[in-house]
Image (cartoon, rainbow, N blue to C red; front, side, top):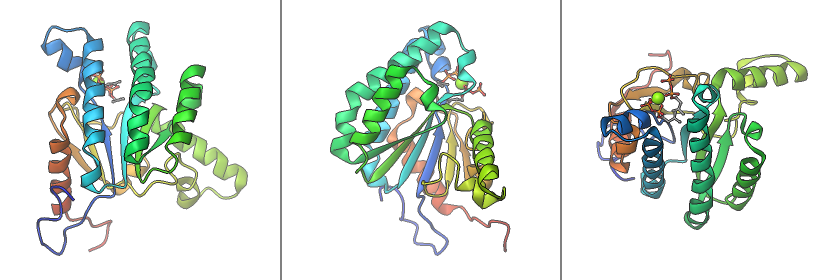
Length: 234
Ligand code: IPE
Ligand code: IPE
Ligand code: MG
């Protein structure tokens, strides 16, 4: 429980599930006169650093927004760069995930990605199935699409109720979302976890994603532990 659980107050609580909108790779590169691709590379390094620092934070699940269903609107070159980074990242870091008990989960319409990436991801999911800490990665993810798919399925199987939808979302087997963080200073959700965010706490930080360190997540968890959650009651 690094950095959390130190307050001793009765309202203190520990986060189980944190999600991050990893934003600001392009601006990080631009500030340095570098191509956007370098910003994305450094963004992958920030992910690696964070996953390596995850164990002592005691989270059950970390969900990362890596590629949105709207990110296809970017140039072909940039989309190619992002897909190639994904290929390389899975290849290089999968053994470490297995060794460290990181259980991979993918949310979003990821089966529509290139067939070789789908195959790599299926292999990675199988290899990490016994892990104890979940790393959920949102790929080709759009919350409206996720909700529409869940609602369609619920309708075909019975009544459309909030529970019926929740149970059919891509996140149905994850703990409730406690904290949603966005880096880079933008204050919007960009179609991420719209349903799950209903009562999540929000934290918007100015740090650009490539500069994000495990310490920043530790601070966010401390901040979260001090918040009072009310869920509409008093
Ligand atoms: C986040 O960084 C990475 C992805 C969306 C894949 P951006 O590429 O959005 O960086 P900015 O927002 O242009 O700085
Ligand atoms: C959201 O960031 C998607 C990811 C971080 C993967 P964007 O940079 O795509 O969002 P907008 O376009 O600024 O809303
Ligand atoms: Mg952005």
